[in-house]
Length: 309
Image 1 (cartoon, one colour):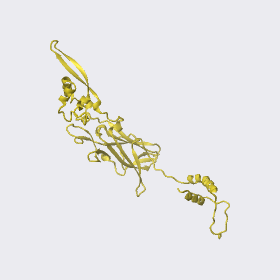
Image 2 (spheres, rainbow, N blue to C red):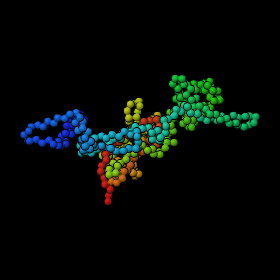
Image 3 (cartoon, one colour):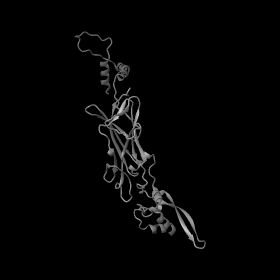
Image 4 (cartoon, rainbow, N blue to C red):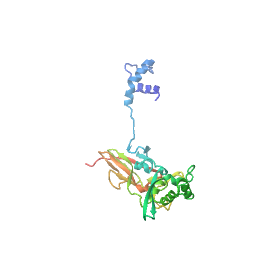
């Protein structure tokens, strides 16, 4: 605020002690030195602040990556809040960023039959996953699972024929794929139905959470990089025969208030008159693809409540 305006407000809001004049004396002029103005400002500024009103609209969530915005009021005076949270599976599981699998190693066993002794001898090798990325390695690697052409020649030249045979033999082993193939994720037979915790909203005592329209499953959207927009969310593939999002699990948003299963934000308010409560969001593990980005958009309001006595 401009200091001159503030001083005017201060002068207008306090009594001028000792200034008495008849009704017809005309305007009163008060002349002050700079030192007197400074003293007046310092003496009364804090009183001015203490008598001012500051309104803060606040609520709390427990995920620091969540963008929380106060979104104004409707014509009826109802205040709405918006949660706009972009996340990945790693954000929900606490795992670090995905490791480049081409830097991993895997175990392969080579059995050699000895005719003289009529027995097999097992030789165990620790092979580098980078062997599945040799073609084009100096520029843009072409993974073996994308195009296997020239790989037998590359393995033989880089290692030997025994190692080349092992790379080919183990290429489609599930463990090898999970260890070495950056684009491989288990299909639906291994997909977990465990719930992953997305975030919480703390509902303060004396308030209840309420949504004018019940939030449905489409409150979570998935990012489609090629198209450049968020659209219908899909999770892990349950068949490796189709590219995402074909044959993928639906991303279903689960809601829960204060530990009550299957409770959700809708026309019925959930809250407590005397204690803080928690409204939480969950999603099935298989409903979130490990390589995709998702966005939760959620709108709610808080209403006053009292405990029944």
